[in-house]
Length: 227
Image 1 (cartoon, rainbow, N blue to C red):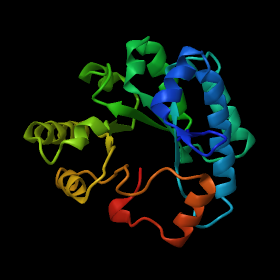
Image 2: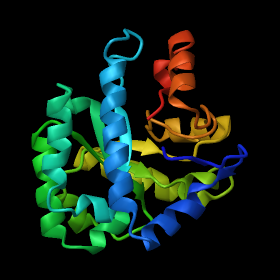
Image 3: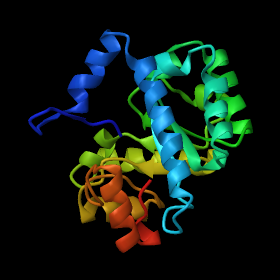
Image 4: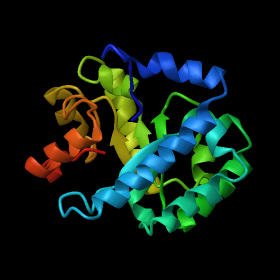
């Protein structure tokens, strides 16, 4: 996760700096940096028994993904550091589906065939449809937090989420619920068959060094693993 800390220690929320970076055309350059940082992190983690088996997920912007050399760049980064491709997860947003679906699918397939894990982020808020899902070689969908926020109060959201889980099961997708903040939300999601979660109930974004320390001291129980 990208976080921007000012010189005075205060933070600029991603909802503010990511749109600004997109408008300035900086996302491909930022994406290159994030990819390099991710590979370096995995290379460092493999030397520690507490982190050697962890997967690392990074978000990929549409502009970055559609760079002509994107696939080669990812594979070169993994090859140079002799990393297991299965430990790197690429999270692609649904809004990307508004582009050339055939070109997008071809790139996804090349990455998946190389061993990477492909996830569709913010599911339910963008342009994907059942026809797209059938064609895209994704292994996982991440349900947007907007569906999880009102799951306790809204029967409609509960019915909708249950339908998404049933569909994902039939299509053999893994499912992650985003934005889990309470034990009640967690309980309902588990009752729908969800086994992977992400949200402030488990923890807030922290620097890499702090995460590694926390993970080594107190691993997350398998029944409530972080995605």
